[in-house]
Length: 464
Image 1 (cartoon, rainbow, N blue to C red):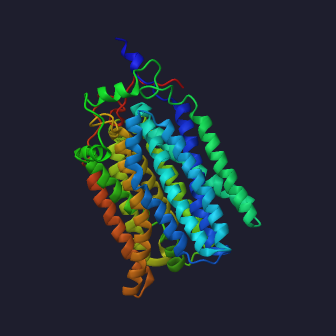
Image 2: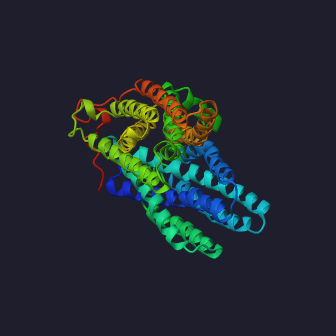
Image 3: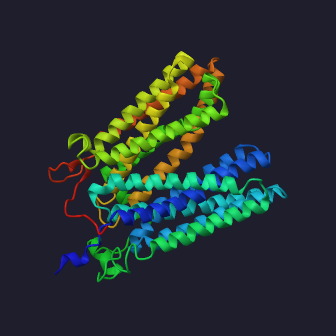
């Protein structure tokens, strides 16, 4: 039997870039809903900030559906329908969200009801499309390219955030309801059409993961599952949870992303209260942090080649653990900033925090792509969905936890700087716990090469 005939073509960089553009489309619709609509509700409509906060939290909570979406991709043997279907649901939610905000100005209860439905659709769409993009990437990217692929994917998603925010902000000035609906309709249509075009021929024709001449999906699934019948979702999820690696990695993802996101909503207020930064200066501080995140991501992607630091320092496990420890140290620096005040080099500290965050997050995502294909077969999507749900719930909880803890600390501690320092100290401790969990992640088993820790597969070069 010609085994090559049954092997899916590994993705080259052009294929990864196509998935990255889909991720950018996803990010564009999400940022329009979570940022632009947020601002309009609070500023133009003078509604309590709690309302958009709860709506954004709702879209995170609904991402608990990610494992179910991933399981669906596993059962069907194809990711393309889930990516495109999820994008259609997401685009519908983004457009309905804009209509809901317009309705709020005339009939608040109806508008809020529509907004709830819209953010439920956004959460469901992100769950289906985002999980399936990562699953397809995990299945088809050569092991040694995973860190670079993860970096490219996230950079393009961030680019989607930035471009959409900039363009929509320009088009919405001066604000009007008609402009909002036109911008939302344009963004939703562009995301859906562009994603459909990018997916043409990417996964391949129907069959096993789309390879030509492959056996039918049903026969493939029976073979992969060792001849057992198709299982129910709860059974599949229980099987994945029983895998020690998958279970431990889920806990690591939740703890690390909780620590990562808890400082997100309190860093700028901290800079304003303790260091006297103006709104513009605190926004620039956030820009420095994002720049650091990008630098950390690029550093880990370069380390993936094994040529920058050698085999030992090219390990995903090394960068995951080191990134968590460095993040904890950087947050300890913010504790010192709260104690010492304006003499502390806050900008350098925040940029280093961003670099540490970027390094650990990309290393963790690349590890996620590797681990998704390990363990029981035909469960890649279920594993990826489980980890995506853990990340989403951690982000939702982290944003709320950071603000609640800072408010409670300020009620207990009279001096605001020390109250913020206490919260940063708790986040630093969380990162150290995450580092301990990451240290238990099993390394990839690969031949001893310069890219061993990245699971190098020298024969998988891809078409591009």
